[in-house]
Amino acid sequence: MRKKTIPARASSGQARADTCRAMRKNLNVLLSFFFLSAVFLLSGCCHSANTRDTVFQTSTLEALMEGGYEGTFTFGELREHGDTGLGTFQDLDGEMVAIDGQFFQVRADGSVHTVMDSATTPFAVMTFFEAEKTFLLDSPMDRGEFEQYLNNLLPAENVIYTFRIEGDFSYIKTRSVPKQTKPYPPLKDVIRKQTIFEFRDSKGSIAGFRFPDVMKGLNSTGYHFHFLTEDRRAGGHVLEYTIKNAVISVDTDSAFFLLLPESKI
Ligand SMILES: [Zn+2]
Image (cartoon, rainbow, N blue to C red):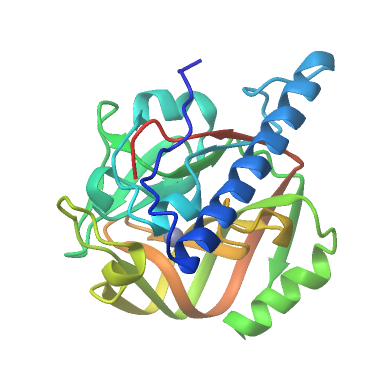
């Protein structure tokens, strides 16, 4: 286990906005400890951070939003915690998609690369995917309809669902983000410079999650999908789509292990 530290952040203690941000961050740290405690409690009986029913995450969405793009965890280490997931890279250099134990990097120029074990990530979410339920979709749906369809199939609110979807998309829009240099800007500023990709009549794979609302700040709540085309030559963070037909496999996890970032934001 790597040493864990809580990200330090300079505080003026003056501006009310800063106070609010600090309070929100403290809440996030408390939540982190809550989830860590939950995992440690579970590890006392029959689970550990490495069990196949645990979702493993490095850093938090909140840290990423504030510019925490310093890679702190290697992909060699990350593969010990799952074979399916998503995330990003050192310096926010693109979108990461993990499928069948292989890591892919979708850069802002649209190119896709396999990832060296020595590369690092500031933020990633992984699990060992075991399909507990499989659904066949055979009627076209846009993003809103598809998410409602999944909500109806998967009503439990406070669990993490992991998805592996093999689908035919009449349309799918994705994005990637450009590599950043220090001092790192906040994520909202980078997203203004994101590159959009649009694919029509594209076959491909999605790895993704639905995180519950109670995990706000730790990860993006709701559905978060990353896409790779069937030939693994394009993809990205999914924004919009119309899915024609699909095989949807779902894994359910209620244990979560969070590794806090070692870097300063
Ligand atoms: Zn994403």
